[in-house]
Each structure stands twice: as C-alpha cells, then as structure tokens.
Length: 115
Picture (cartoon, rainbow, N blue to C red):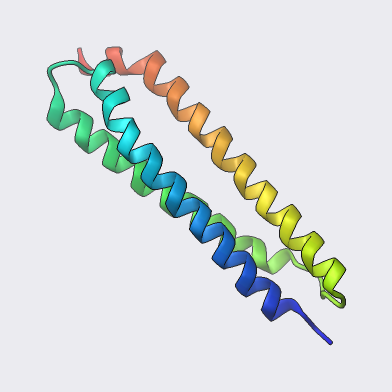
C-alpha cells in the first residue's frame, strides 16, 4: 500500500501550522525589535516587518510544497513517520537559519539604509 498521500497531508498540516505559528510570533515580537533598530521611523518599521513576514511565508510554504516531489514511495508506517520527521526537521532548521540571518542583516545594515 502506498502511503504517500497520507504522508503529504500530514506533512503539509504539520509544517503549515509551524510556519504560520512561528511567523505570527516573529511578526508580533519583531515590531518591537525593528522599532528599536529604527527609532523615530514607526511606519518604516511596520512595513519592514510586513515584508519580512510575507517573504517568510512565501519562501517556507513554497519550499514545503517543493519538497513533496523528492519523496520516494512510502510503503510502511515506520517509513511514513521517518520521512515526515526528517522533512519537518529540515523545515524547522531552515526557519531558524532564516530567522538568524534576518536578524544579522537587520542589525548590520539597517542603520546604513535609513541614512
């Protein structure tokens, strides 16, 4: 029995939930962080945070969808759990890397951009 369709559904539900939850948390807390980096430019802070959120969603959800083509045929429940775990871990690691990369870029270059 091919379990790929079940695996795709579970994987997309898990990763979409994680992506949306983390995106909302980063957006809510990111406003404060960006406001401290760019004092007296509240509108620019809000727009910067919105652009970061949109890019975050597009990149991560697109990546999740693209990883579906690389799945081999899943023949057992054990293999299903393993594949979903590995693929979800890759998404979580990429989210954390993107988060720290965004913080690095913002803290290093934001002052140069507003001057």
